Every structure is written in structure tokens, then in C-alpha cells.
Image (cartoon, rainbow, N blue to C red; front, top):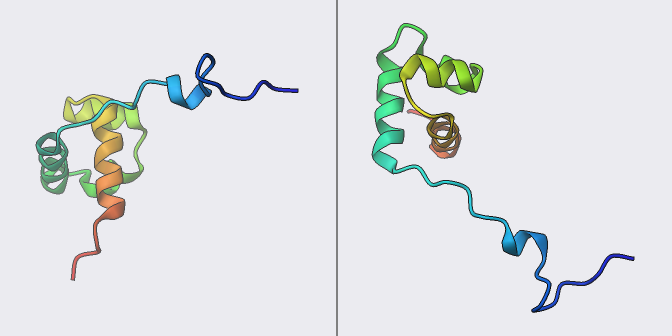
Length: 77
């Protein structure tokens, strides 16, 4: 039986460090660069994260944040 979390022994999620946060300007800059790039937004959305990061010269965390941003944004009218 697993031990229950207690003040002396916190749950695993309580001690896990938070995911790195990407400043919004970097995310917006990446999205704008992808819009004008020959590979386009589809590459940003669906390309291998390491390939997208290398193509645009950003960290993979920025790629992930941009994908989250694009998936949360309403579709263009």
C-alpha cells in the first residue's frame, strides 16, 4: 500500500518543479516568423519539435508554448 502524502512527505506533484514559462513575446515572434516562412504554420504545428526549434533558432519549450497558444486561439474569421 502506498503511503499517503503528509507534511513530512509531500505528494510527488507537490515537489515537482513547475514547467519553464516562455515569455509571450517569444511565442508571438515565433508564430509571426512561422507565418512568413515557406514551411508555414503547419510546420510549426505538426513538425518534429526539434526540427521546428532548429529551423527557427528557438528552444523546444518555445515551440511547445507556441503550439499551446495556437491551439487555444480562436480560428481566423
